[in-house]
Amino acid sequence: MSAKRHVQDTQNGWGMLNCPELYELPQAIGDMPAGTMLLAGNSVPGDRSTTRMALYKSIDLGRTWTYVSTIATGGSHNIGGDPIYILTII
Image 1 (cartoon, rainbow, N blue to C red):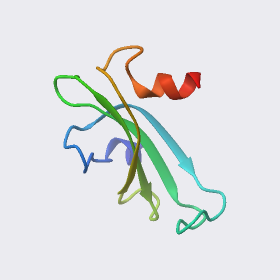
Image 2: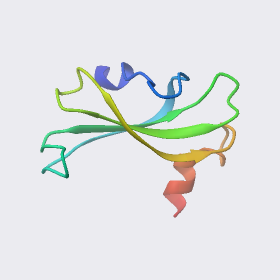
Image 3: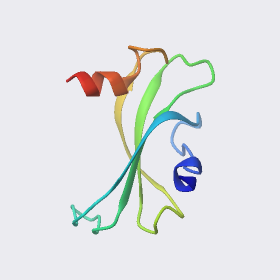
Image 4: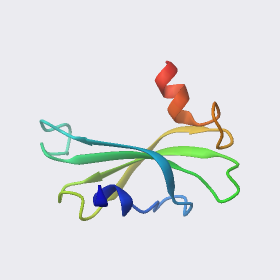
């Protein structure tokens, strides 16, 4: 739990507001070894005008995190505009 609380939004400077999803790779994928932790979360600016689902990875059990990519972008931060709901419906 503490690892998720300390992931910083290093790309947008907005902060990781909500919708965290944590996953540990059971086997190597690409350049990520088995045991790599992946964390996706909702990056939202202070005015909540847009959302970006950002993906970070950790190879040291959550002590440090590295930006991987932006998975999805959405509209204002409200129910329905958030990309987490779009991804869930599809």
